[in-house]
Image (cartoon, rainbow, N blue to C red; front, top):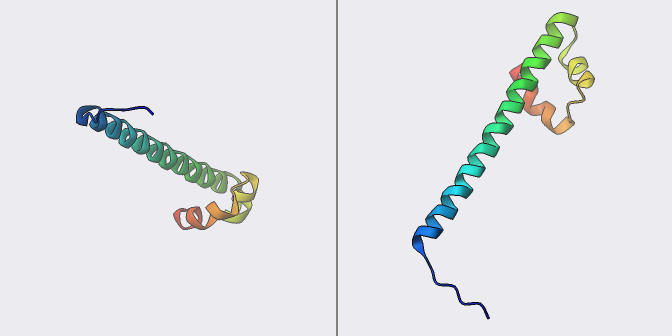
Length: 72
């Protein structure tokens, strides 16, 4: 059996690192979404395509379309 002594400072550092990683992951996802919206708007503007056709051409997954469509 491994015995580990509780160290509050180490625990706080671990929690801090986990929170930072979670925040970075959420920020990156938001950035990807914003880039996708910008790319779709540009494609729609330059080709005069509908939202559906633009999303089809960029292969936007069905689950994401519901979230993205109102932003266009």
